[in-house]
Amino acid sequence: MAAAATAAKTAPGGQDRSGSTAGAAPHPSPAPAREPAPGVHLPLQRRRIMAGAAMVPVAAARTAGAVTELSDSSLIMRLTRGRGWIAVLCALLSGIVALNVVSLSLNAGAGRTSFQIDALKTENSALRGQIAERLSATRVEDAAANLGLANPSLARSPT
Image 1: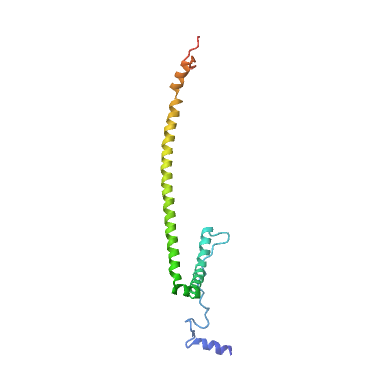
Image 2: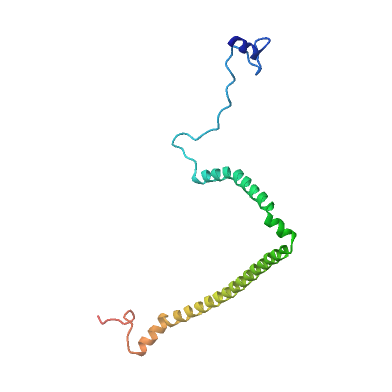
């Protein structure tokens, strides 16, 4: 019986369906994907990317299923065919307008803050200049001379 099965697999001339001779070794299987050598690890970022890429088809299938079920629900069917649809669109558009207003007010506040920062930097620079002028060596020496103090480096000791 085994000989009949082998004969059925081989074509005339001693070749099987894959094209090799009956007694020859089977074709080697394609080389498996290269894995890192033992002790060599993939970078953590690359492993994370590979794990996330494996989840994309599953997430897409689940999302497609959820959207299909949502569009077939009786609530959505009644809502889109009635006056409630106008209220839903009005609420969504009002939300978009509100977000734009908040964004613009935040940008205006940031602009005012930027002007205040520039004014304070200018004021700090002017104050630093005044401090440097008041603590300059010539001014301190003049004030000391008015008080009757002598500069030790200029005073010569009698020898």
